Amino acid sequence: MAVGLNVADFVSVSVTIEPKAAQYRSFGTGLILGSTPGVIDTAERLRLYTTLSGITQDFGTTAPEYLAAKDYFSQSPQPAQVYVGRWAQTATKGHIRGASLSPAQRLLSNLTGVTAGSLSIAIDGTARNITGINLSGALNLNGVATLIQAALAAVVPGAVVTYDGVYNRFDVSSPTTGATSSVGYATAAPSGIDLGPLLHLTGLDASAPVPGAPAESLVSAVATLADMSGAWYSLQVAAVTPPADADHLAVAALVEGLSTSQSRIYGATLQNANVLDSTTSADLASQLMVGNYSRTYTQFSRNDPYAAESLFGRFATVDFEGSNTTITAAYKQEPGVAAEVLTESQFGQINAKNTNVFVAVQNGTNIIFPGQMANGDYIDERIGADWLQNRIQTDCYNLLYTTATKVPQTDAGMSLIKSVIAAACTVAVGNGFLAPGVWLGPNVGMLKTYDVLTSGFYIFAPPVSTQSQADRAARKSVPFQVCCKLAGAIHIISISVLLDR
Image (tube, rainbow, N blue to C red; front, side, top):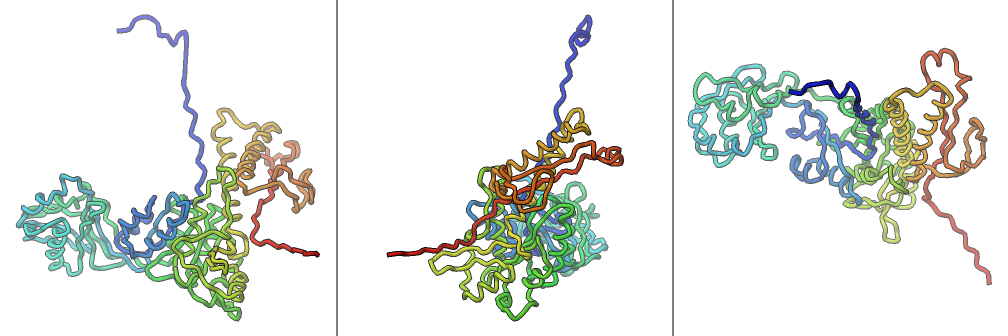
């Protein structure tokens, strides 16, 4: 036992771990919203994938979610990740998923010895006790599920029991759909060998039962997923039944409104050739253009209903922290998407409706053009502006969050904030989003119209002495104004050649 005085009486040392700064948001993560049943349910709603093979395991190679992801991941370089979400396009079934079985738990011998099994489970609110289940003839776990389903269907016609070989678990689904559809945990069977624990469908370790849900609108599903996660940025729909134009318009309006809380963009593939018709304004592209939507883009493709996913897949690879990394959509490729062969008139009409297309050029190349949102803004500038907003916002938040004392409400404190904003803008110059140029905006502070922004940006903050007493009492900063010059991109070259003898 130690004796004597504590060393801390003479030397006192404390160690403080600084808080981790808030992370920047990713602007390279897409969301594919599908309606294929039996994979992602309305309780989980959202699943992250980092490879196409993971989506293939879950959805196979024919589901819309896979086909859209194939276009997304076919880009070079390849995006790092994508979310797949669930839209209850039609009413869903209530179901329960058993726990994932360990290698020992999924030995077939655990179940083939059962010749008089019982399963007590509530389906659609009614308790059921199925007895006399003989599993001795099962050749694999799928066969086990088939035998249990046959016994269950004799009591509850249409109920389904499956074995998920990817996640190694049993699943029981109700024969009905909608809000009253349900499957509960397996409970103790009154007789026979209780299969509930063997299938791991009891409340001890099974996933929470998922009730059925009525069909929901597309915009309702998008709103739910927007509330659920801020991790995804771009949305495309890959549903069993393609959405109607009214659905697309409703989502475009929602995404536009979400920009005040957390910015997103929406991409839709157009397969109706009326976008090529100059005599109609009833097509979706025209309606989106009239709506002046700055956060929705469209791509025309008669051959691929998920071409818009490929377009964003190229933007998903941009590293905004790098040097000269920002891109324009124009002149890029869409691997796996067949190029459209258009007349000059058709191409002009697509451009007039602010729609994008992967088009064949007579010199043997295929390119995306023009790379615009529905309102005519360029897609790269929309994404870049969202990134810059988040970069400045996050950096200023981290200044307040990680400062051990305080940022004073003085000119010196405002200079600290200004330096943080300047550092973010400097990154934007480095990645090619901003660049030096002539300022064509209004007079701001010392900056006048037609002045040259030699650094690509200018930041103005008035002296603290000009601040109102109310703002000072509320501990607000002075208002900062940041003037930035976009680097832009060249899409069309005009050359005049004069020959003289």
